[in-house]
Image (cartoon, rainbow, N blue to C red; front, side):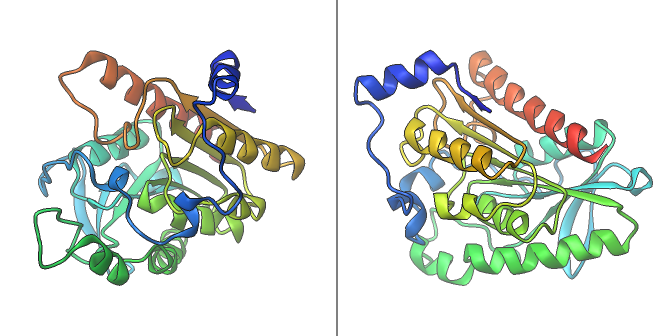
Length: 269
């Protein structure tokens, strides 16, 4: 279903605030980091979170929770990587809900650094492409299953959403969530084979209401259980890179986190 306060959706369309986007949208068809992907960078903290860092499938990984649950959730980060404190907080919430959360370092110790002029975003992305992220995510899913996980879900944020969608297209996981995605097109959505939640923001110009509605229509037509939601007054990255001193921003992020937890509870438990 499309959940976005439908009157808001149609208001945006009627008044032209949602620009036209084709299936191969500019946001998804070009493998480049748009400005929305890198705004408001977090302060990374390798010691953050209630869990611990270990190795899995060769990746440094933040773990939270117990594998005794047999239910694992892979969290694929945005370009700032697995040491983002707010991402680890989400992993801790996932663990508290009864899952084994794993946040791998898919950037091999090199998250995007906007202050590193020697590594501009296109050069960085060439070495850390979403396609490489998908290959690495498959290794992680396989490793989680080999450690005893009977079901695996995956959530992807911005850059990580593309890897998660690719997992969903080959049914390598049992459920998926993408939050303020990048690089994901309507053609990708056509290939999804598992239950999918799509959480996007009203102010994220790369994924306007018209495109979200197209995603929802495709999933409904393909009889894929779905939850497509647009959050009013939210920009790209709002679930991770929010202002912790802004109660409204914190509340909107927490609602998205709860939607994520409800989706995995519904489809993994």
